Amino acid sequence: MIKAGIVGFRGYSGAELIQILERHGAATVYLMEHRADAGDRPTPRGAGGPARIPATAEAAGAAGLDVVFLATPPEVSMELAPGFLEAGAKVIDLSGAFRLRTVDNYTRWYKEPHTQPELLASAVYGLPELNRAPIAGAKLISNPGCYPTAASLAIAPLVEAGVVDRGAGIVCDAKSGVSGAGRKPSLKTSFCEVTENFSAYSILEHRHVAEVLLNTGITEPEFSFSAQLIPVHRGILETIYFRAAGVPSAAALVELYEKRYAGEPFVRIYDAGKSPDLLSVARTNFCDIGVTLHAATGRAVVVAAIDNLGKGAAGQAVQNMNLAFGLPETQGLL
Image (cartoon, rainbow, N blue to C red):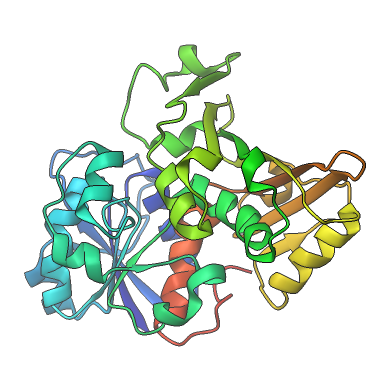
């Protein structure tokens, strides 16, 4: 059994991790207390639950933890990761603390200093479908962001195959449920602000843009990204527009995707002209992709959908854990 600690277990991604790991079959969960002032939801009398230990390196070592999930803000992940690694645990970080490889890139997009440059340089980016091999031996795995997971899986095969007119640019119109903003209360995500509303934010400056550029090889001038908040609990749907080059039909693009993701258990491709929706991926670890092409003009649209708490966070983190410990990649996720 893998002994798995979770820091940030009261947040939405942390709570999702608990649910997945408790049905995993090869993991024992430890809830790691980081904020003494944080309250729990009420529970029925007599209800049990995972063991609780402090979120310290000493407690992780004493418990013999094999892996610690950090479902925490970047600054907290930077604070805690070194100690857990020194205690002998692998670390899977769900924040953006270790995704961008260089201090300069992190500072540019996150507008904050990076306090662990050595770890930033050594962290392995945990998007299995694009970076599987290094994950198996990694000690520190940086879980991708939710928006970049869907966008990268949709765009990377097109760029690899050279079927995008890059001079025309790529536009990604991304919509997310409110849980993507985390559990910390704010005016923007309060009920009265979100319900019956629909708003865009961080236009052209969203910090997740940097991950898409790294994963796909496109440049910032080629990529326009807009994030939008929709009044649903969970889910991400991205509508991606580009000009196709040298592609005769949507069926040819479907074939391209199927070839690239052959054998991938969590990427599902739709028939030409068909697209996924949020219900297609709700509470799963799937990324669903559909493509439509107007051959006469080269106008093409890819729709990619994920559950932001599943493939966009906790599900992908467990997928990375499975790879890191040599378990079946789908364990606990199908």
